Length: 171
Image (cartoon, rainbow, N blue to C red; front, side):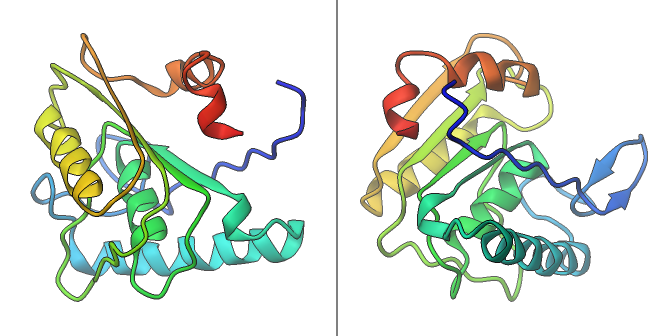
């Protein structure tokens, strides 16, 4: 709101049916296709590292987040073994990925904000609840919200970010 934050929104590199940008092929919800996930993870990690170099804003000053597959990639980039920890993670209607050969590091997790629609028809709210439990057990400061509808979609991100309860979380 005071124009002191930088927003950057990468698009998934894949164009797949039914259309739009994707980060990986979906064969089963909760378990991204290994080949496409790992390739996109490497691209996203290089992009995020390059953003830090270009802007001079280190990972510790960066909050990463996304919706649906973007949330999955945010979990991966924020909690992936060997990755620098961001200042926080915002995950809307996603899940913590389970991919052969990909390892999470849950030691010293950053603060996280999780939003999920109670009646999400694509990614069950149970994935959001599971992420909440996993991160709380790892010692993270977790802000968890369920919306009564299907998904807290991208249009609600800006409105929610200005909400009084989110504001201290981002400062």
